[in-house]
Length: 337
Image (cartoon, rainbow, N blue to C red; front, side):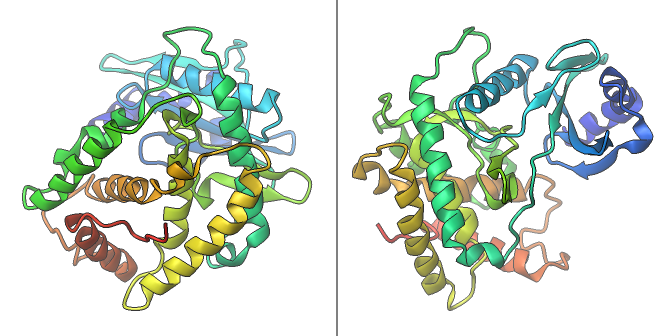
């Protein structure tokens, strides 16, 4: 599927058409990559922008428009987020037709500031507090968010691409698949009231926000925005903070980081939103959910070697092994609740 999309994208010069719709010189585009989208950066009038082109196999045009509505709603209510800009045709999103599929192009202002790299992010208590406050404010706004059009609605958590495609995993992963069904069954039994369930960012790792002295934290990459439990937004942040730790001493390091993160994060979160302690105790199942999604994603281009022994990335090989063991035993990456 991925190769077919790339072939259509290149064959029909989708990038050139998208650039033209936004008045961009293609020579100024710098490819940034992306798993489900084609993402580029460019400069205009000494400012940086992001061009993202999304195949309909990943998101429909209406889903992209729903994402933009969500971003602009948050920004209009005090959340610092990377905003979309209008095309030359004064449209927020441009649909580009090809014989086999269509693509939706969007341009965003690049978020001010910079990412906080590892390992600097692991000891930044002030950023943890700021993350808590912006997450809490987003969840409080989500409770009030009213959809303008029933067709412009983001998907629910269970329609995540990787959860829908568990069979990406090799057939030998039957124990991982058992954990998958266990997680899904547990989640389906959780309450979905307005105080706990709504539209969330969905992917608030350290790679999806910038920090600057003037703007503080600015969120971007809302491509995984979905209806889910607010606590999932918290679990995702914990997972990406602690999954770097592996080996024999990894468990203790993960616990120390998770406890410290939650202390400062919740200090900020409670300034903006209230979340019953019941939901914090559900974090372990959402950590398992995120690990499962990331693990399935690692097999997206699987070529038959379950250990990935030809990879030169030793950390990745260790993570694959440890992640599979956790999933087969249905245990979260960290459990301090």
